[in-house]
Image 1 (cartoon, rainbow, N blue to C red):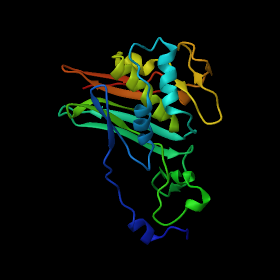
Image 2 (cartoon, rainbow, N blue to C red):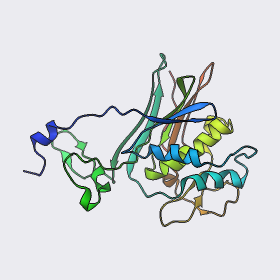
Image 3 (cartoon, rainbow, N blue to C red):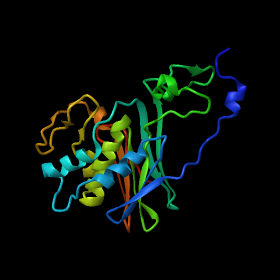
Image 4 (spheres, helix red, strand yellow):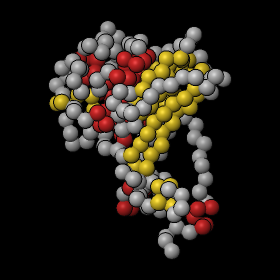
Length: 242
């Protein structure tokens, strides 16, 4: 009895998207292309002023990262996880309903909630076959064609900002992966000043007291002899091995 019928559903298919990529510090960073926002990380890296001679204790280190990105909008109910098995198969995964409880519509008898990602459409953008913008940006950095860093976060459009900070700390500054994930982060959303969690150098930011707004990042770093995995202490996640 709604606006979606069986023909609409039968025309829906999964999409196998080729990632977009760029070189960064000897690695090849792979991000999800539009209609997601992973391309913004690629573009920000291309704009990034050199970090040579700087480290995470320097205010200018963070200001250069922030200038390369700019402000973003808020996001919604999203999770991130990553995994690597004994064969080397690696997965970086985001899943999202968008707003809290998505559309609020549950498929009867299943408990499955439908998302409402179409909220990103402007009124004149609704049309058959159109795809809304979304923020899901699972990522990997490859070294010699093999996964080196498997990483991502929830956090709406601030995922792009978190990606940049993790890449800078882990790939550029060679920081321990657990320390890098747990390190204080800054965020900037549209209409809001730059905000920083306690522990960052003075970057002229206002306090950021809400851990969810800084993302829940998780990462696996593939070392020559072992794996180093970290979950975000801001989250209720865990890093597990078998």
